Image (cartoon, rainbow, N blue to C red):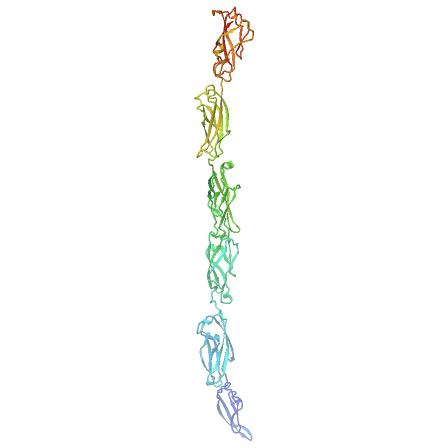
Length: 634
């Protein structure tokens, strides 16, 4: 009978007669002990029956010899074979750090259980094993050999094979296991912008909320590590002007009030991207404020004044405006035009330079007097932007009066009659006007150029504000004489203005000297010769005509008998009553007629005293001296 302390007894049997031990089942050394002890008991047979009292026991040790019937096996846990392994490894794990322990065993013994282990596959270069040769069994440590390959951003998973191959057996049994290394992401990557420097352009007329652009960064890390938020860094003025969407990275206008290219053309701001692990990356943004036509042209002065003489064509004044919008763009290009005030088209303006010129002569005298010689133009400066901006300014053009007009008398010829006795009185008042409108061009003085012969002078009389009159007077130091002097004068009177290069206007005054009854009549002596009167001459018959002379043209002569004397032959005075009624003189004609019968016998000689009287005489005696007329009676 066989007995042992293990299951090996099931594999052997003993012959009851011969005691031969025989293998009765397959032996598996790897499942048995290497040494199997079998207790064999021999019994005596008494009458064919085992006699326990007559028995002997012995121990038989059987050595189980190894046969190469096993291949190397990988175990994930004790007695659990595995052909796949999975391990999670943080990226950038340092070299030589073990990441996985694998138990490997070949149940065979000796050379049969000696095998080589190695890694195979493209990703296997990242790792190595702590040993290459395994004798029967061992714990393999999978270690990091190249930490740079452990980059989650390049490979999330590394896969390779682990081989175990017998080295010294004919069978060269082998095993292979698939190893999967999942790389665990670490926040080892900062956010990355696709540019190192951003240049943006923002129109200065952008509205609040205007999206300028979207600037985003990427993060090679995973999960929350790659979640990026954005914010701006910079000066207060920049942060008041712009902002960024923290999630989307949209760069937008926050407050358009601060977008003024004319004040600041460039702004610099830093955009910061922060990932979920706290790593940050900054990028510089240069923001150029592009010009919008938000500035109207501004004139360099509050007003302009130009001076031009009438009748002159020339440049007068240049207006200049500037536009704060960007230079050398339509927004700052200015075009000038005369907007108002030149309906008669006297002026033109250079649209580029702003030079205002007169294109046709101005006539100061034809201008509205209320303008006081000032033409006010409204000039517009307009830029070329869209929409265009414009400004206007007043340009006062002072038209200077030129002495281009001659004084003109109110009449070209004056006719006047002057009594010869006139003295220190205005003979005639004349005036001239000058169409020039400013002093001294319109101020006038007068003088007698010709024809006065010292008999006339001119004096100035006040007229209206800008006009004086001239009074032609008889020279007080001389006297007109109708009888002895010229009876006609033709005066040339000149009016001169006071302007530069004075102008002269002339008029003619024809003066007729009027006779004034200033001369006494004179009896013509020849008409007073002795007269012979006939006795008994016919009544009212003219005896003789008494003649008188008066140089005055308006003389009104009246003849009178002032006395009569009656004489005898001896020229002795007789009684006047004897002959006082014999003769009568016709008062107006001076004819001496018979007024009564003549008596020669009573009176032989009659002496008449006659006188002529000028009834129109005003200055001198109106009576002539008495003349004597003798009548001899025949």
